Image (tube, rainbow, N blue to C red; front, side):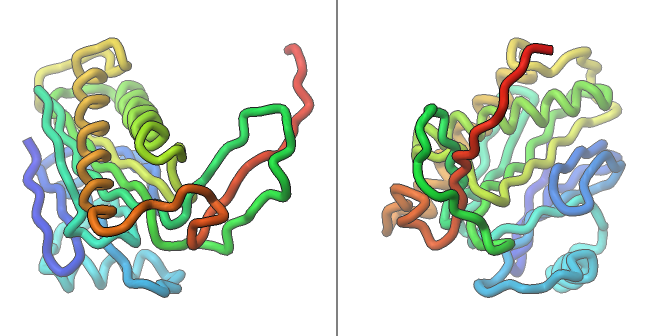
Length: 232
């Protein structure tokens, strides 16, 4: 499986010759030996993210480049869960919740984010099975769905304004054709993400309560725009 190491505010998930798909900065498909989750300080304003990521990675003693997520959550709150051929590590904080109105009523003026803010639910999930790029994208959607369902149940919010996910597959592992929710890989991914999100939230909010609304949070957005629906 994957090896997870935390040093100097940087979490490395390492495994040689891995295929990754990231929804984060500079994301997409890449073959690399490692992926990262980097905790940034309060008041973070850097925009040269490639340079910043390289500085932090090398400063933590990690030489191998790879897809990277940024989070405002301290990595002491990183939590992992493993199920069958899947494992996930999550950092979860909701100082910048993203709420979505699903009623027909206007909930009042929308709140807008002023940019990147601390918080973030970041997921790094890997499987020892070999799946193609299409199924790896399916696995990412399964991880996002599990994160969203868990966050709604635990906090009332589907996530934050800066959530991101990295998923990974072992090209040399036992082949698996599909990775949706009804498959063994998908089911293991859902369970792993659920449990890791719950544990990270418990760690992050052990001494304080999470915000109960966008207005009570430090930052955040509420989407209540109405649309024109149509039949294609």
